[in-house]
Image 1: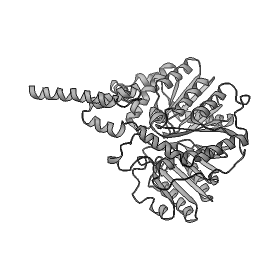
Image 2 (image 1 turned 45 degrees about the vertical axis):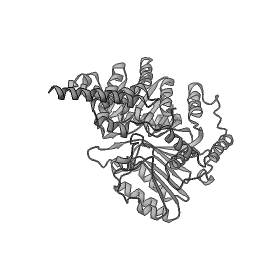
Image 3 (image 1 turned 90 degrees about the vertical axis):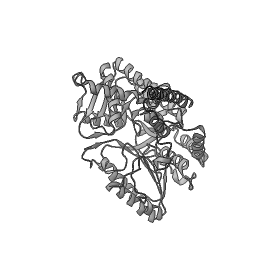
Image 4 (image 1 turned 90 degrees about the horizontal axis):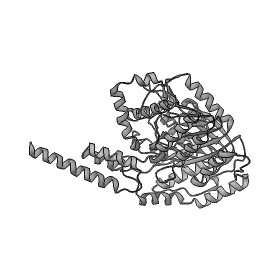
Length: 484
């Protein structure tokens, strides 16, 4: 027994030394993530390294350089076209029009993310899956030139098949079809799911890695974006993926509450740009070079000014997170947040606490049906902390809440793909629309209040009723929040 005990402790010691060397050798990782990964590797000798190999390694500088280089292929003309767009529509963001901190938010995205402010867009706020796909399929049917599609999750089921069949019909008609999917989100797709689309001339590519887990060492960095661009005139983005669950057809999840945007106007151009850059960073053969037909002039056709903001592990700006921090800090009356996962970093949590203590009405809405129990328990831990500070936390009880929105003062609204968690801010490739339209923001607040009617308030009584085992699971899950 003495020999076995000695060997055991030698293994533990060596494992700990190797864990420290492995995690610390990757520079520019934040301290919280370092400690979380050390905990994983030390607690799970051997197996922890396997997890780290697939989920923990950062994107190498060489890989980032490759992505950024591919993104730039054929994009020089695009930069010039954006400049012309600004000049043509006088989008120089006059401070007299956008007062105080709103002007600062716009400038934050312009300077930090090169996000052009486009004016006079026509926006439809969509909150039902059937409505979203009915509109999308009708728009696809009318396409004349091209259809560009990106989704994180793509399922081989009723709506997935229906969407691909619609794309196949357009490909037969000579419409350019380009589909980009995430190999992890679409891991359940059959090998031949896109064969007919390819046979009719459509192009289909996986984003950033193989579908085969055993050879994909970048599982942790996913393209969580959802983008559809039709003829450069109509764009879609938001929370809905492609699957029957998003139509509320999964009994275990119930009704699917999400938020999506249908965009008409020059706000489609940044979405198009984002798709082309993602495609060129992923395509093995057929890159897409700049062409004016991808960027038709739209003029002012609506009431909404907006910026499309993207973020990902290829850029240390973390623009969407900074945008959320700025929005919360500039709120004077209210902050309403909807998210399925609430795992903020220290900066966001402190910003929310400051808003609460400053008398701002802070409301957070979470789902009551967790699709990731480990993440959900960490979410409840952070939510409980907000309740203790004075925030109102609502638990949506009418199905599953997947909506990713934040609205302040019934004035500025953000809708997109980013959850309110560290993964979305630092690990996933995301895209959000920031909308400067008081009318649209009020509509979102009305929807929020409607959702409250089918939710229950997370009270001190409920929190005090948690068992010690439940509280332990919440706190234990929270230990790993920097890497969830």
